[in-house]
Image 1 (tube, rainbow, N blue to C red):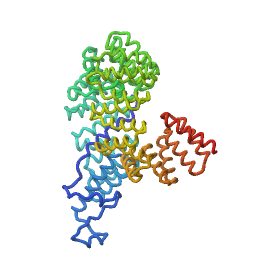
Image 2: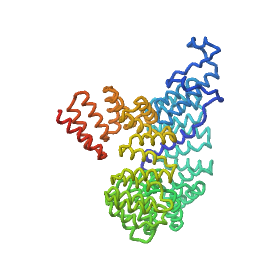
Image 3: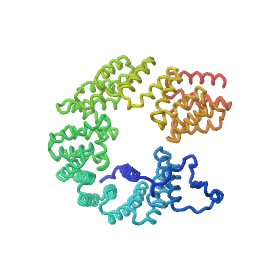
Image 4: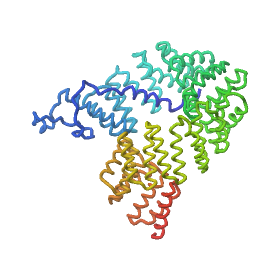
Length: 598
């Protein structure tokens, strides 16, 4: 058997992370004011008015309750940083919590944060030490095994998982990981034995039966696959299990039953991309995609019947993943001439035409999808986008209005209506459509951002800032809104101190976002700190190498430094990028001016 697909273990790490999200260790403690705490690895000394001598003695011995209180506070800060994506500071804070209250839970959380902060080597060593410190803690061993897998040390990971299973035979996750490791190493018999043991010990485990079905598929055991897939689907009728069960039915010659189950999977998806991704995920978990194609072909030949629509769609999904778009298109064009599942085939055929850059054919195929089909609205979005991208704005506008006239058109069509109006130069109508979408679908707060963006584009800067503040009242941690408002304030020269705080808050949430780094760099440029501005802008362009506005800003920095040649170079690079018309016009003017001065 070929090697198992490489990314399958990420999900198990995510599973472990989510399972660890419980409250801070120890009993509930009195709240500590965040204003007294600094984000570093040193625990803050508790202040007591009744014990002034404690403030003067830096080496005071804390009581267990004090240590737990400080540990819990550091842990909560670390979790907040973790959720915001600031893994390095999260690692520091949770490690500090562990130093104050050495529990295996805190140790594991600190290691996970360190691994996510791109310190895999150090995290793995710490996980090994954690296992030695707590040899009976199963979570520590599972975490160590997960990190070993990420380093490619599969045999060592297997040893850890086998140890967990021996001591905790009813834990599901170690079995799942071990089955995948055995299969990846080509030990299919071991994988099958492990899956059987899991389903015997935990007969109500849908993942156990699902993995058993996939292994049976590779072995060509259609009867075994059907039994296992049926059990998995009955225990958990998820889209993934529905697709697996439907495939098992088809391979067993039960095409009509398979279509009913496929319908469940299709109705649970909301785009053709999601349908195909679910199909491909099935084969990713079975083995590599080339082998999946071979398995399908072999089993189809052994059945002695012509390929069914369901089997052919499986093949199309895999071919798309392998970038063999022409082969996939050929299959779908052939299916479109038949009489089975024409609405689904038309949907996928439209997507196939888009992949090979044949937008007119895609539009024509999408137009054949009836209103009753579950993906009718999603197909409508694709039709409108095709017209918009072709510059057929009047036709796009008319089609969008047709969808908006329906009782529940979907929020996407209000977004499209605003985009088409803006592209047609009707700024007020774009704002109006975005506002209408916000009223119709208030849960979609993105409309407030769109309103602000169109207001800014129309030169209504004060209104745009007011709208963004309206959004931030609802979502105070919306990093995009924080950055947008901060950048607008910098451009308008208003409340620069507040603008900097807003941008820095956005960067706390997403520390390596190119647009946010650009905004902060531009703030320093406006403040006259050219060195700091250039440092941040160079970091920004490294993260977002195709962003023309960042290049423009670097050109402005070069002008301030008196380096005309560098300024021309940056402006020339900027003008070659995809830009808004107003940005292109502005940068073109700066380029011509820099050339004259050069």
